[in-house]
Image (cartoon, rainbow, N blue to C red; front, side, top):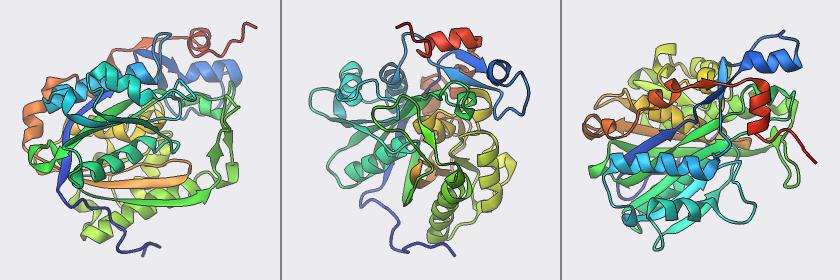
Length: 357
């Protein structure tokens, strides 16, 4: 039995669903073997095949705009009807100026809109989704946009450099009767666990190595996912698909196994082997890839994780409208397929790892 409050499920007063979704992955790819070549003499195991790298003209703002436009295409609504544009990220380009205002303006949602930025490590995007559920579910807004997007970086030579990637996803939440997929409810589980952090004046994050893994990722993912299933009286066999935060290839596979899910259930959304860990976008882009192949009636479990630490779990049920509208914007697989490999020198230049002063 999980260590949780049985009344803690978040379920809106008015049913809420996903009425539009969109992904974005930059085209550049750094093979993990390149990182190993430079820093490990080509030796050692590789946590992923390759990772997506933002180009010189890309950042969280530009990528959020692309994903948001895709979500609007599937939602088929006027952007001026959005009452919130919230962007979750670890890599907002400005320390003070909000990403949300730039995205809202570019999408055509300004000026009558709430815009802002969210932070909670790799679950900043799902934090925005939970808040958007509340805004729509309370009746304060008909539509709200939540985005999880990152241009994640690791210190040169650090283990994170193999996986820290760029990309993410956007979701427009609205009334369930207009939705492509209904969000039946969510559950959040958080503790003060110092597994990973970055102080404001530092460029690269630090690890609390002994807190990584069991006390952080697995503890929170399992507690959140299991409690949500228990509260709704469901078991893994009742789900068609599941998505778990994917900092590498092995962690989500292990989490699925611990919760009782099969490799087939997580396969569509397991993208870290080919695009790396997109941090705030990782679970959310796994969901876009899953929605790209799901069918009406399919039940989906999504569980995010953010260091610090916490997880958000969502119970999602696909509606017939998904089949009608998902072809209105590019599929996640299309972004993954349009790849341009780069070597370590090109990557270092694009990600600002070379100091010229």
